[in-house]
Length: 150
Image (cartoon, rainbow, N blue to C red; front, top):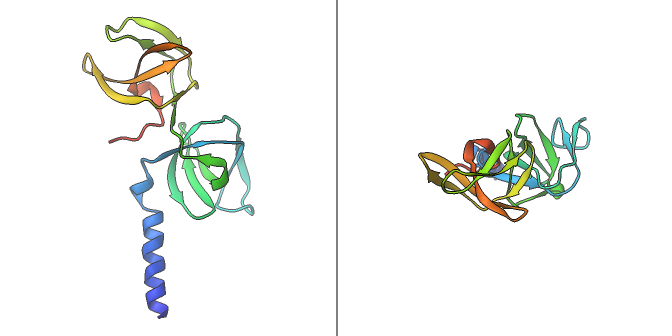
């Protein structure tokens, strides 16, 4: 019986920490402490205040999730402070363009967008369809972060 439980725990641990989470994104729903480890006994490295900021899931347990920020920073957040809602963040100043690549608006780094649809090809480049403050158009996919790869 002991070995059976041990095997189940090993398989469960492998499943929960496997790379299957590596392309999953979630978002910060409220102020969250980014800790050095999965528990209150670990120091707080950063406090995340940007609501809806996308983060990549690296590992997960029943109380904490290890995440990566768009700049590569990693740490653990309490599960109650995250959401499965999908957003992406602009990682470099970019233009929203129309289908003819006419510039409609400049979007500065760190602006958040709801995920609409990404992967549309215009002039051999991939774009994300967006709608921000009534401006509808497309952003280059390589200028955003927080989108799962197919």
